[in-house]
Length: 195
Image (cartoon, rainbow, N blue to C red; front, side, top):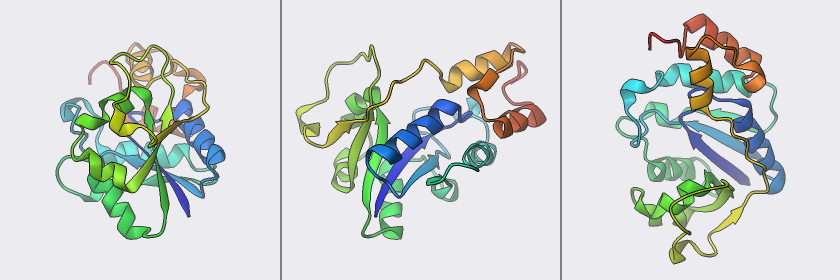
């Protein structure tokens, strides 16, 4: 069984996230891509992040009609920072025979050797890397050679940060959000200027 692991804050999940999941699934013939919602990302200030249950609800809404793309709440049931190594090991216990592909951006690939227990991550997964034009920070280290491949995907400029800025300014997010995600944003008053 081949499984993609696509982790993120997803604050909010947008259409490019979904397109990445589709592209990864097709490129590697993955049975499923798990969209792992980070409960407590160690690299972000938790005061500035929408509560995890709401972010998970948005991921569920965005993936409702997407075969093979599945919301995953594994990190929401674990206390402390959401370290990738812990998530990968927990998924390994659930899917002992699976071939895992961790979907990350090129900027993350360069930074990965500085992550918490990176070698243990590399022991469990292959890396599927999204090209990021203009990525700064140099090339991947030699220890990553042969452990990753580039996912053929044209990355757009759309980001969750941009979506939040538009909503905060009272502008429409347009077609960057699934209608069901937009409905949650509107009903819960997410990303408005008072946050």
